[in-house]
Length: 375
Image 1 (tube, rainbow, N blue to C red):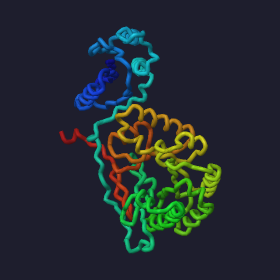
Image 2 (image 1 turned 180 degrees about the vertical axis):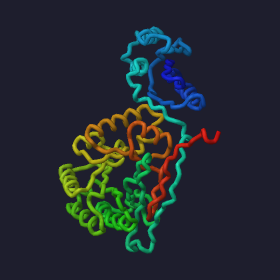
Image 3 (image 1 turned 30 degrees about the vertical axis):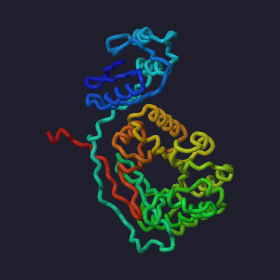
Image 4 (image 1 turned 120 degrees about the horizontal axis):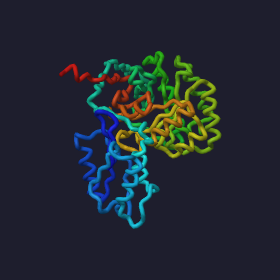
């Protein structure tokens, strides 16, 4: 175990646990549940033919009391493997990185979840169901995309639902392949109508479109532009999101349609980035205006070293390409706090507001708790 104190109140540890899998998991679980520890991040969970430090119990190196190079050599000297340990070993590379403090800027001190309260603003707006078209078997739920720190709603995402709120998968699974792309495109007419009736004001509207809809429906772009205008909206107000979960054939046709969308003033986004087939390959061929990081990467990011590294790389990549980035599916205060510390400002998720069928939900804005006032 390595320990480094870098302020009067904060001590950072790096610990390597070795042994039978179940016992290691049990010890790690005890550490996570110990109230004396917080901001615990699992950097690596891997397997090896034997323990690197087979005859060593709990060994502590305090970096405030030892020279860093001495510690690096002392760690190697404790090795019991058949061959001399070196810092080419992946687990020991984490040791070296911690000792040399080359990644300290990536260590975020996240406060306890109860440091924040999330206060709903009671501004829910619902459409009269009698105003909804009666000849369609779907509707839309709207979810705010927000900047929590400035308490500002940036956009609303229109999420397709069955008439009674069924999930998108349930709705689309009932369609045959010939109907799928027509229904996907035609549904945007209803999304624009509902958004217009709800009153967007200065907010943007985000709609989802299957990538292959642009390929299989040659008139898709002109249809969208006409429907935007027909409902009193402007192209610059609209974001079209494409998920990377669908394989895109005839990419040149897709790319040409995207160019037409952008030329009309419509913003383009990749939704659920990091969870689909294409990922970085899609990004290398097609640079959107926005990227929305997938819930699969967001989940418990405050506890996962690999997810933290991936998201930080995405943030750096998007900054280099001047692509706006947001986090989707945020459900825990700790997830939001870590992502905010990493540099993300735009969020969407049930922590702030659940999607509301036929309406716009209230937003629960974060408010910092003042514990000193109650003492």
